[in-house]
Image 1 (spheres, rainbow, N blue to C red):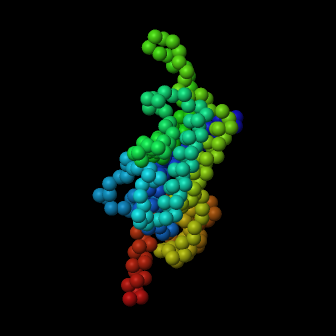
Image 2: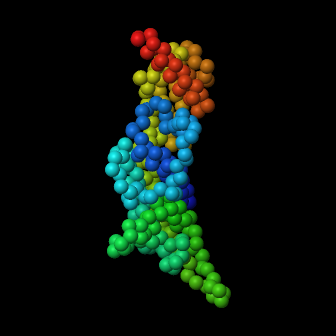
Image 3: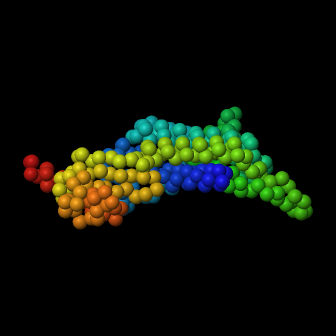
Length: 264
């Protein structure tokens, strides 16, 4: 039971890191974001002609120069997460890898003596996405069955099954990496008051609620007396769900503009 749970949790954490990695790369290149609007709305609010970020085409953070990153916290988190997963891949490869040198499934260790930086980095040169997928394969015990040569004789499998103590280490590392990434992006489970953004319908205090696997929501402290055209949650508060947040963003912008005009 523990083994199955550990595999599931490790794979889920690794996939979360891959799915959010592009957001972290964007965060490094942009000033720290305000609490509002939530990061999940960034792509919707961003100009429509922005090119999508292809993560697999980006050089690893550990191989890049960073003359003027706009968000040092995001850069530090990204470097730490890369190193955690790269070091984990090294550990797993040293224990279970039998793949031949020319096998694309093989994890190549660093070669400090190589003149070329990418060759010296080994498989780390392929970036975090590659490392994460490779680790997931080891956690799922992929390619652990004997293979056949052309003459039909069996050969040793490219990898041995992952022993329990290394599964435990993979789970621990992947969850730490996932947690740091989500905290850096403000996507972890948290409740954040928005004192600079009063409710545009009743001037009550708005609160942003975020969780890793759910879309953000916003609630108003006034309760049912608030006239906002949104449902009431189980605590009696008006609540803006994912489908309502763009409208709320527009309403808050209009309310702020009206206040500025009034005070001008």
